[in-house]
Image 1 (spheres, one colour):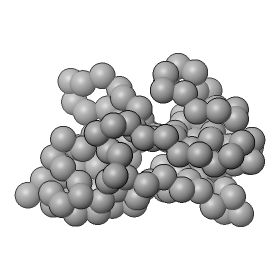
Image 2: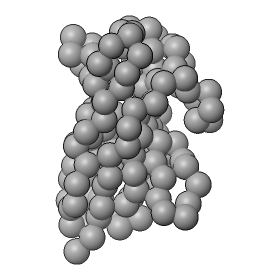
Image 3: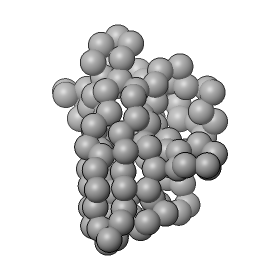
Length: 123
């Protein structure tokens, strides 16, 4: 099972980026929930957002709610994280993760991890 994250980069405060998480092999989004975690230098890893497989319901960490939108394209087996109104405190390495069916805010409960993609928000 492989996940491939992409889309990170350097953006000014207030700008936007869209991250992608492609399921390269191993499972379908019909059966796996996909989440995004992030880790800033010297900080704990934190959950950002997740979309469940059963009903496609999205979940957001409170600091990104209203700014970030998670979505999925089952045909392309890809999950997207649209990030708007970015702030310097959003700077981190973002990881996409997968687990069967339901989302969790606890990253050890995810059994599949992609490589990180760096998001830097700076003027």
